[in-house]
Amino acid sequence: MSDPSLWHLRGFEQHLDLWISTQQPDQDLINLVTAWVLSRFEDPYQGVRREPGFSNLWWGHVPLSISDGEVVVCSYVIEEANRTVTCKSIMPLSWPT
Image 1 (tube, helix red, strand yellow):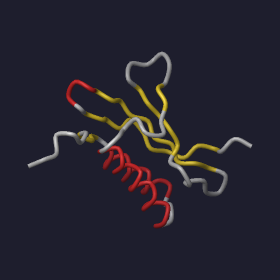
Image 2 (cartoon, one colour):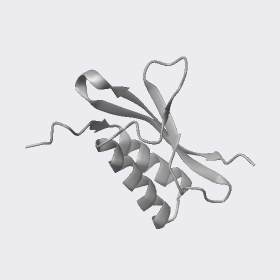
Image 3 (tube, one colour):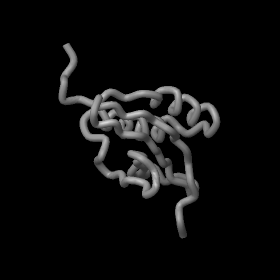
């Protein structure tokens, strides 16, 4: 029986696979980002912010994911009515200097 307090994640596996195949990060970074994704099951609002002008679009960087001047960023849509979190992207962005 699944825990009703947990959120349902959609599309994260596909976006993780795409990020891994295109960016070829090291295993430590893969593990870090995967653990962060899995933390969305319990609280998808933790450490992210809502993007103004979009309905329920949230984004944030994965803490400690800075590598070679880039940080891994994830965006997703949160649907509270059915407790669903749908991934829109996982990608590296240049870290501001």
